[in-house]
Amino acid sequence: KPASYFNLPGATGTTNVDKLQKVWSLMPATETDKEDFTIFVGSDFYKQYMVELANKNLFNEGTKEVAFGTTAKIVAVGGLNATGEVVAASLSNLVVGTDMEGEEDKAELVYSNETKQFYQDFHYALGVAVVNADKIGYVKY
Image 1 (spheres, helix red, strand yellow):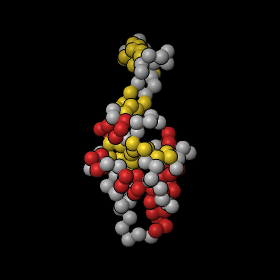
Image 2 (image 1 turned 120 degrees about the vertical axis):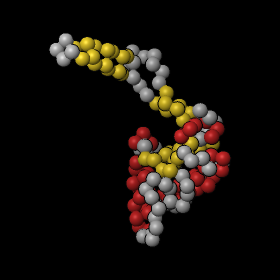
Image 3 (image 1 turned 60 degrees about the horizontal axis):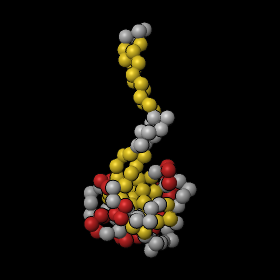
């Protein structure tokens, strides 16, 4: 985690529902007002969050796509499993990135005489890069 992330040490709570609401409330309104503002959590965190909502027996628990009591979308990401990390960001502040410089990166276009067709094959590493790190919220529980 780069030091320039918007650190959210005050995003505490006794439940995952409380924690997500605190993450949302501590982020600047300039970010949370964006339509694509999203809170990323591990699938393990998300499962606990969903059980907590079910146990509250709410008349209207909202939707699975929006963190309860907020306007933030919530997305479970396998890469955050068992890390205790929560990341809050606008999707417009994230871009797909690849270095395309390693020996594992290659592209092939092959013609098959048997089928009379071209086949293409790509191998590469893919990741997410941050545009403005100071607009990304981060907390580790």
